[in-house]
Image (cartoon, rainbow, N blue to C red):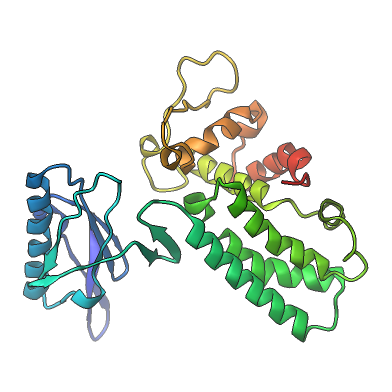
Length: 301
């Protein structure tokens, strides 16, 4: 993996300098802009030392290229219940251990549950709804739905393939924001929630998340995303029914693995029609799945 780590400005052109640091360490690196994450499976004392050595190599590299890490902002998160929770250091400083951290807008927890992310998204959505209620006198369907779809819903759907909740309490928490938004529309505020959804042609959030999962699966299966399909999915070569791109669903004991994106989407993907799977563009696929998911879109939780 190559990452731009510096820019050299010339009189007539702009030159990028690419520096590869991945071949110097044993651990895996994830880089985005100026953020760097390093991770390694520490299931033995030897692996703990290897991770410590890699941190030392990163510090040495940063000093050599005069791009020092801000050690005060570098943190450690221990994953899995059987993690030895060893101490790690950078430039002689012991790294702070955290149980949760916001990473690219998503709150990650050491137990890999999404309650904190759900609460944060709902809090932001309700905050904006309150602003809309206080500052807009026009409560018509057109005004409220335009504001809701452009200002509120993006906070509740940001990166949901990563953190889509599977617990009923978390799903109801998110659905409650949309429930409050539909009550702002003048004339239907006293209707039942499912009737308001049908009138406004709004699908429930759990169906919106299913739709988002299916679209991302379509992009991965058709190489629209620049990722290796085998990292997420494997074709079900033994299946006799269904379409030609039917996926194999693995069995897991823990909910953490059972409800990850690459596993929870399999059943829904396998239920799609052959016509839907063979769509040539993302826009066409979106139209087909909207029709196939519509019967489930407005039912209550």
